[in-house]
Length: 292
Image (cartoon, rainbow, N blue to C red):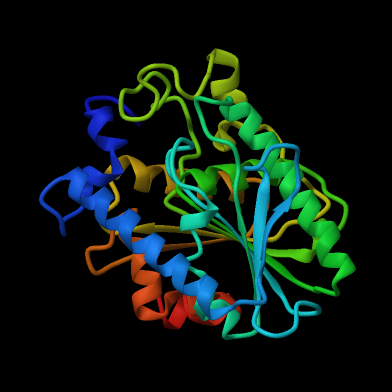
């Protein structure tokens, strides 16, 4: 799977954009885009609740976006990417408007970043966060939850599939977008972990790789949507395909989709805003076959 390829380039997502002359321009555009969209979301939904703590540090928090009434509506949880080292919820509200306008509450999650904490610690934070949100969902009458993660966020949510939560049955869909599910090729890779930023070792590389998990929660099996872009690197695409096939061995239902039109790992979420793809999450079964 990893022989005879340039793993630094393969795991440098900004290098695969066909829209920009170099990786720096791609990243600058992405940050400008997501910052603007998040600011617009906060202006559009002034009743939203920001900075709700689920842990002890300021970054262990989330924002809840809604239009008029907070209670009873379905919940959509979003976990941002950034190689576990960049971005935060304050620039990750770009998925909010289409979903809130179609009756969802959208919860945008934050977490501590490497190298200030280890990747192991981040996975523990996300588990605590989702557990906190599940209790909140019960209190506020939500009867359905979808979770979505992009890039590093997809990895963090995939790790939850081994966990058994109280009220886990509320989670109906996992949307995993351009994720990394096998950490072996990025360990000590200059693209993401050249100086040990992720604080991995031989044991945690395996224990934190979703595709190497030996068991998944049997009490509840949501539908898993494996999504990736046409212009993701071959290794990113293969990570998604291999993980999808691996989940099917555990009798977990998987729907896989490649976005076309020259979409890459960053453009896939930007395009979602510009074309209304995010609206698909109100009815994922229909849109996976008709819209995407």
